[in-house]
Amino acid sequence: MKEFPIPVVSATDLLGPGTQVEDETLDYMPMPKDMHTYRPPVLPEPEELLGLDQARAALHKVITLLEMAGTQGVYGHIPLGVMAPKDFELLNRVLGEGEASAIVHALEGNLEVRVQESVFAGVWRLMTYRDGVLVDDAIEVAPVPALFAETAKQDVWDAVPVWQGALPPNVQNAPMLIEEIIDQVNTWRHGQVPHVVNLTLLPMTPEDIGFLDHHLGTGRVLMLSRGYGNCRISNTRLPNCWRVVYYNSMDKVILNTVEVVDMPEVAMAAPEDLRDSHERLREVMAWLEPA
Image (cartoon, rainbow, N blue to C red; front, side):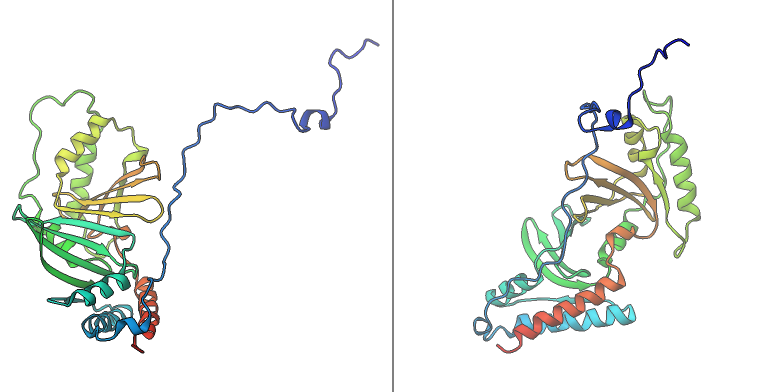
């Protein structure tokens, strides 16, 4: 009998520590690292709050609206008007800054609304500026400010632009996608599930993306949600059509979509969020009331 030509090696020799060569060329996509969590506002001592009745009255109105929003689906708007500086300071400290913000440009070129969600989900601060000067200040309690949908409706084109002539270089799949999106826009109705076109999974060139955005148009609502990573939401010039782009913590696009829906879900506070905000703000007011 001839000797077996392959030496016998035990499994422990093959699988023991240091026996495997690591491939150092693997390049994993970095995962988002920043995730927004609720942090209670840092409040002054009760004795420092004497006389700040305007701020506390506004916060009580917010509590009332949060209760109605969470139980009845009824939303509301609170004009702040003129307040003493210390009242505004208290209001700003209690509300804080949450994970979502937005800019809505008015039809007038020198007017814009800066929107900031508070640390209480569903409680929004809307500050209107003209030529950089604050001219209006209000709080809105709602899943998302009504201004977003109102502006998106105003932005709708009378007719979608039609490309004439040969397609630009490297534009390959965008024309077919535009036809699909327009067809979905024409048939979508309120209450239906969103139609989502995931551009990340499709063979799209940079020129395709540019061609697509040119035909969808860019509206005046731009929202940034800083939850798990970043999400940028903007309306197009088609009805009920939004661009929703997700970034990781390195500002690299990880998901690029077009959503046909009245309002993307990622932009809105859920009913349970509104109920949580109601309870949290009540706890804050329990601290403020003895003053």
